[in-house]
Image (cartoon, rainbow, N blue to C red; front, side):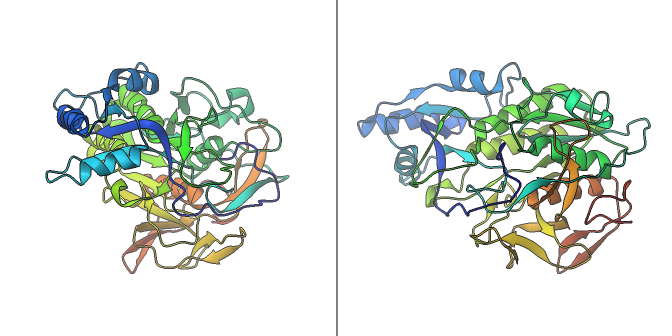
Length: 400
C-alpha cells in the first residue's frame, strides 16, 4: 500500500518474479527444525534457530503456539539466499518443507502491483446507523490513522485498534487500512471492526531478486502472522462474536519452491484453529492482468475476491499502464464484489473522502456483505455479491 499515492492513479505493473523476501531467514515446520539444521550442516552451511528472537520481534506480546505447543513456525538463519537454501531442503530424497519469508503487498495501486490509485472527492459519507453491535469483523491491513482523523463511526466502540502504533499518512496519500475499515463499517454497520496492523516494510527489511524500484513496499508474512496473533489474543475468548477476517493483501507465487508459503499458511491456520468455519477468510484476488495466482487468496481455505463492475458479471484488473481491462479467468477467484469508484474515509481529517478502486476494496465489501447475509447470485460457481442491502447511497458502485 502506497502511503503517498498521488491523485492521478499513475501505476506500473510489478513483474512476476519480483520475489521479495527477508534476507537470511528461512521458515520450516517446528518438527523439522533439527533435521533441517543437520541437513544443511552436512552441506557445509551453518544455520541457527532464531525462532524466539524473530517471533518475539514480530509477534510481541501475542505469543502463540500450535496444537502441539510449538510456535506456528520455526525460523532458521541461513548464510545464503533463502530460495537456494529452501531448494536444498525440499529437493532432498526425504523433502523438508521450507520457505523464504516473503513480502506480501496490499494488492496495491502502484509499481508493486498495478491498479488505480486514490483521488480525493468533495462529498460526504453518510453515517451508518448506530446500534448495539452484533459481532466483530476482523481486519489485517496497513494501519489506522489516529481517531481524530476518522469519522465518529470509525472510533471506539465501533472500531477496536489492536495495533501497536497508528499509521502515519503523509501528503496527498490515502490510508489503505482506514479506507478498508470505512467500507466494512458502512456496508455492515451492525458489526464492529477489530483491526490489527501489518505495516508496510518501510525500513528495508526485504530484499528482492528483481532489479528495479518497488514503490509500494510490501508487508511481510511475519507481520501478517503477528497481526493475526494479536487478533487471536484479543478475540479468542469470545469466538462466537467473530464473524469473518478480511485480508486486503497478497502476492503472486514466485519460484517453484515457494508453494509451501509456510509462514502465511501458518497465520491462516492459526486463525482457523481458533475461529473455524464460522469466521471465513476473504482476501484480495489481485489487480494485475497476469495469470499468476495471488496468495493467500489462492489458498483453498481462503475466499479470493475480484473487483466487480457494478451490476455486470465482469471482473476488473489493470494493465501495465494502469488502464482498467476486463480480467481473464482466474481460478482462485471465489467471490466478486463491487470494487470500482468506491468512496471511503481517506484519513487526513474526519471529513476526508477518497475514491478508490481495486480488489482490496472488493474484498472488504464481500466480507461485510457475507457477514450480513446480503443478497447475492452465483454464476459459473462464483459468488457475485450484489449491491443491496447496504446502509448508504453515496458510494459509487454500491447503490440501493
